[in-house]
Length: 147
Image (cartoon, rainbow, N blue to C red):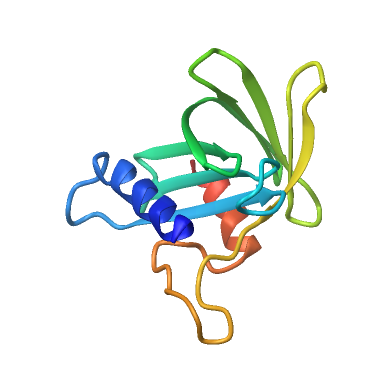
């Protein structure tokens, strides 16, 4: 139930930035186990033409949600790096890795973690299909490039 509430909250928060006829995609990366204090999640949303983007950070067993601002995107060849800012001005750099995970760290490297793409959908026929969610890690990385 907590998962369903989070997904609905995220969809409603993002819906205000899109018109009714726009479609959007979301890629989610997490670390830790959902429902525990160590759980962390980054959600990256974009509409079909990449004119609207939204990034959110969720953490802990209560899954508190914080909006993030994309402050910088750097692309060198096929590599990308994103810098995001929390409401309190704390910044993190997000860098996709060769295995399609994300390395997320602060400038001082005191916070440095690896996040993996999080599948959203049915498992063994149980659960709800997420039509807005990207289908795999490759599509998730492409969504980050299009932010």
